[in-house]
Amino acid sequence: MEPDVRITTETPQLLREEPAEALEGLFAAIQAEGMELAMTSAYRSYDQQWAIYEDRAAEYGTESTDESMARPGHSEHQTGLAADVISIDNPDCIHGDCFAETPEGQWVAENAHESGFVIRYPEGAESITGYQYEPWHLRYVGEQTAQEVVEEDLTLEEYWEQPSAAEYSEDQTEL
Image (cartoon, rainbow, N blue to C red; front, side, top):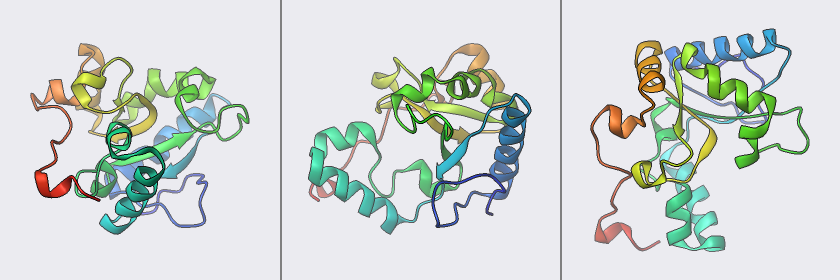
C-alpha cells in the first residue's frame, strides 16, 4: 500500500497496510506539532536492494557497506515494515546522522513508538544490531511491542532474543 505521506522520490514508496496506516498517523502527529517529515525509502525488491548495495560496495568496499546496510535477502526494506524518514524542511540536514539533532529527529525518537515504530538501529547498539546508528530508519513492530522496546531500552535483537545482524555465508561474500 502506498501511504499518503510526503515522499522524496518520483517512484511510489510502498509498505504493508498496517505500517502504511501507522506511518500516516505518525506524519499527522508530527504535523500537528508544526513539523514536516518525508519518506525517502520503504519497500525494496531484491533487485533494488542489490543495486543499492552493489553501488555502495563499489564506492566504499564490502566491509564498510556491510556495516551500513543489509545485503539483498537480509534487508528490512524487503519486508514492507521499514521506512526511512527525513527532515525535509531542514536544508542543513536532509539525511544522515544529523537527523537525530533536528527537531523532527528528536520528535521521532521520543514519539515514534506511539505509532508502532522503533528506531531500528539505535546509537551505541552497533555491536548488538550489527549496523551503524540510523536515526532515520524506522521499523514497524506494532504499538505494544514498540512501547515495550522503548520502556525497556532494548534493541529488537534483545527484545526478541535474536543474534545480531546476519552472518553471510561463504557464497555470499563475493559481489
